[in-house]
Image (cartoon, rainbow, N blue to C red; front, side):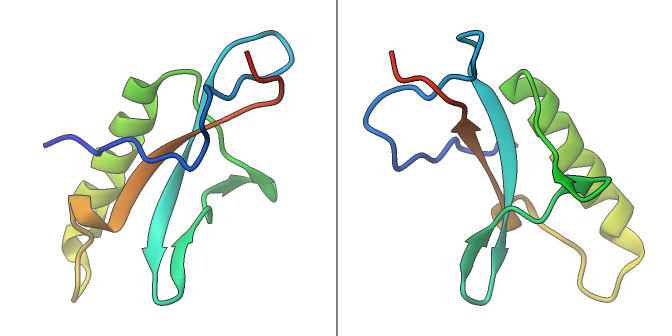
Length: 84
């Protein structure tokens, strides 16, 4: 069970030091939204694998809810600064 990476960028997106970072977006009624934050700042991950692990943990934690999350509720997108 893996989340597919989604991107609207034509080129890889990189941060200031040239490393691709990732965010997790959640499917909402109006579309995809980045609502994962730490101290009101967007949560970023250095690898796709770390983002994937957070998604799987969120799904597991939601099992107690009336409508738990599924893998289709999330996607991983690259973010950053300079285009290569």
